[in-house]
Image (tube, rainbow, N blue to C red):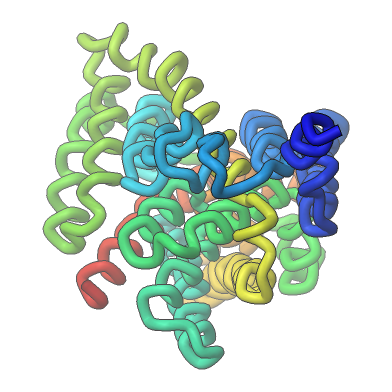
Length: 378
């Protein structure tokens, strides 16, 4: 009987709490949304399954070394890539190798929409400080508004590692839920006439422009915000691998095998970090609420800035205000949302290429904002 009691003490049934059940339910919801609704399955399936892994109850503190927060466990070793900020730059390398900046180069003024959308980061920073978070924690929470998971992880690993689990889950959740969150905001802030607005076709961009952009972009952005160098350095390097025409194998590896491997490791470990015994706190819930507010403000900021630009632009150069919503960093989901809403209003109005310009500039903008916050706080 003593042996049976000892065995039962080590089982998940003996260590199960209500928090574990809540988090297991969240993990199952993530997997459901990924498979049934196809909301960012490449992110939500690893994160959802990681949540299940992290919330299998076990007896802590007895030397099993299986939990993600237990020193010496395999999951803890893999989690170091999150805590040390190793995974985000590798993700950015792959994003750079996948991204075509032609839409941005053909109409540079759309870059302003990507910058305007970052207002959500700074307003949420102020709100989080007001609610009692430290400035470092508030900055890490505010970056959720950029809808850029790697940047959120990178900044929180530097400024608020104790909040990295909640911030990462919130950032990736809102990235995946872009098709649900953004359309109501867009419809609220735009009229039917504005949603039907057509934009003139983008000009053709030369190969030389595409090759020079990652070099010039790196020098300009990182001289302004050196703290963003690990992210933007890899982003622009990946883009140069794509555009140079002489490093095709390296570019293909960066945008396929490598980014897939890192996404798996990042998603599973971020999901596993939601271990109920350490994750489920009032602070985590407040971070989710602030993240949602930040994302909504960022979306609204891009739309309203586009409407403001139209007041001073010539009629032929005016911007469909919906394009401003793509200023957040959720590439390419925000641009797809704009395209979908545009076609819904007018089946012949294609806005995807226009929306990609602020979308990719939002990636750059959120990384620059992270660098600025690091310089200000460290």
